[in-house]
Amino acid sequence: MSGGGEEEKDIKLDLISEDRMASMTSMEKIRFILDGVKLGNIVVLEGGLTPEEQMKLIEMTMSEIDEDFAGIEIGSYPVKRGFLGLRRRTRLTIVGPANMMKTIKKDKDLIRAIISRV
Amino acid sequence: MGLRRGLLLLLRRILRRRNTKIGIYGAPNAGKTTLANRIIHDFLDNTEDIGVVSEIPHETRRAFRKEGILITAKGAKLRVDIVDTPGLATKIDFHDFLAYGLSEEEAKKRAKEATEGVIEAIKWLDDLDGVLLVMDATEDPYTQANIVIIGNLEARGIPFIIVANKVDLKNAAPARIKNAFPQHVVVPVSALKGDNMEKLYEEMARRFR
Ligand SMILES: Nc1nc2c(ncn2[C@@H]2O[C@H](COP(=O)(O)OP(=O)(O)OP(=O)(O)O)[C@@H](O)[C@H]2O)c(=O)[nH]1
Ligand SMILES: [Mg+2]
Image 1: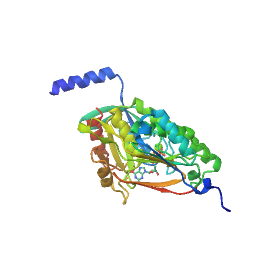
Image 2: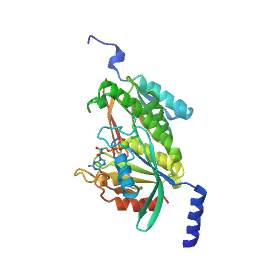
Image 3: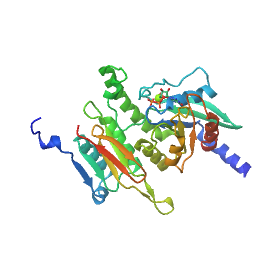
Image 4: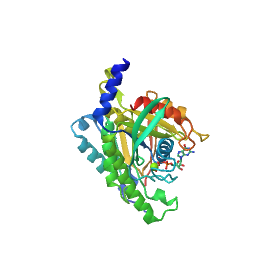
């Protein structure tokens, strides 16, 4: 390989702020994530996705898997219950292409993603 | 309270006019079909299988329902339909199937069907009254698939039992599953050997009635 393009060497991270997320509908969030991930980016969402949104994301991912796109790897902290368990608060979610995010190791308060170039 | 509760249960059953539908969920290879077959053998027909068991992931690629299974445990009775669902995954790479000796064509076909199967499993959540969430007790239970399933069951108010399967294997660690999900009911079993199934049936009769 002689030099290669920047695109080939770099791993791109999209860090989306909670404010940006708040202005998007569930479908917009999911489309945004999938578009990014299919380009080979790692998408990190401050504020995270709800379990329902994550399920929808898995469903959409399945319908778009083909020979070039093997799906996603996803990690997030569990939903935190607020006062009396009434208010649910999602925290952070990280999503990447399955062929780049090799493993996600998780604990209740730690997510470790191992990312490699394809 | 006995009479009132009895009447309420009866009323609920009449109004529902159908069997309690129990979905079996979990990651590919967790042992869902093995468990479904075990339940059917124990209470319906010793010779019938709901589906094929295989060491190759995504063996089940369509959801199957077996109707009218009368589960009895310590005097309690529960009539259920069992729905065996395809394993839930966030990625499906056809290359992974090549290692099991499938041709490239077969592997691609299996992958395509598997993606449809996952969608079908997700859609079935709309029609269930209870779920058995099966986890392979030899593996790390704290996976995103498990967390997402639990989050969705909680959001929908669907009662569920976590089944810590494969406890016959010597590296099985059901305690790890209990630690990961301390607020939920966890029943360790071997669906293959039939170990501790009585306990699971009791718990089902209690929670899914
Ligand atoms: N030792 C042991 N092996 C088991 C047990 N239950 C299932 N297995 C094995 O695990 C593998 C997968 O079992 P299946 O029942 O096909 O798993 P599944 O969850 O239905 O898998 P998919 O349909 O692919 O999602 C098979 O090789 C089974 O024999 C168990 O209790 N103990
Ligand atoms: Mg199966």
